[in-house]
Image (tube, rainbow, N blue to C red; front, side, top):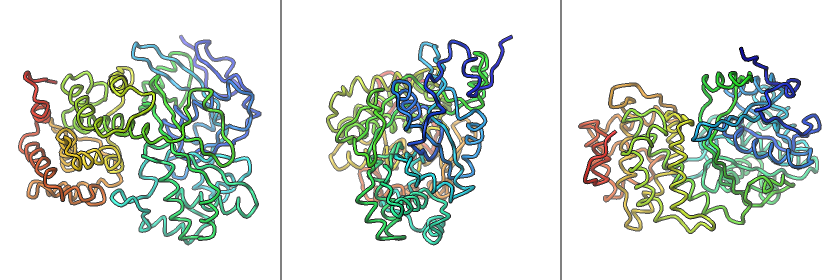
Length: 501
């Protein structure tokens, strides 16, 4: 019998030798970073890089305090507290190897919804130099069609009128910066780690829109003093499963919420910080003057590629990304989408061979030990597709490029949102803040082929382009007549010999 040791600070020295543990003194760490939205990705990415940095340096000022704004954040906060804010990162290699590493960079956690005053005080404290975010695309509260701040949100209206007890991220940031300005404390950097093109610029735009409405003078100070570095982040991090927890127990570690991830990781950041930063470049991060080509490459290839596989694969009946790649039809389709529709509109990327990058993506997607569920890939598609896929269609329409592969994905999304089942009749697990609205527009498709596209907040004016609507109508009508997604994929590929699942 394997003795299972509960993960906490006291037990670190008792863990199996195969498990890497922090060698730095966590008791000396101050939380120079407050991270809002502590999920799996933050724990496999920024917290990992910071742990690496703390292991190599003598710094004590760059620990991380997690912060949760929503009731849904309570579980991770409670578990982290129970484990002295430690957790295990399980790095799964394609050949079956697994590296288990305890991450020690998180040293505290605050539930902001329980005590907004304590949360804004933490953000306003002079010790806090960076506030980083993984709040998903939907957390930025922008209209997908206009990219403008959505003031119609009831929580926004509440925050504007109750600045000292905010509910939303921009209310908390504005109140904290108000306190810092009043106390003469320098501004913190706001660092987005979300998959949004120009994520720093978007964060700045949304925060200033809110702050100008609430306090115009403070907004001027924020505009002058706060830095919002753009960044490109990348590491495939699937949802932790009960099997992952069980596997770790077989090693001898009891961790209530470990994180699994692939070996590959990338973080490219514009070097623009208000009040200092860790030397993350010493542990693999890359600082550049302009992150645009890198983030565009990642968003249009990796993120869009995920959505291509996620939506088409869900309708077909696949369950995971690696299952899709193991299917020659899907592997060929996503590579052709990358080669023929996404790559031609990308900028030159210094130091990157795009063919090699795409081949690496296919290998990463196909890692059989990263069971990345398609339901996770497809969640909040209403926030993802307007950034990851629809711009590729729009740019190709403007330049006379191909659109057929991406257009079928939108047709599949319509069917997915309308019927909510795969070709076998199995119910799909759809998670999207716009789920009801998407269904409302998609459900009229059988009487009006263009109905789904009339959801302007998602598709903008795409419905006005005749070349697109012709391709879309063909795809969606064919799909509704016979839910045979692989037949349409083969037709678009134009293969001499049919590729079959």
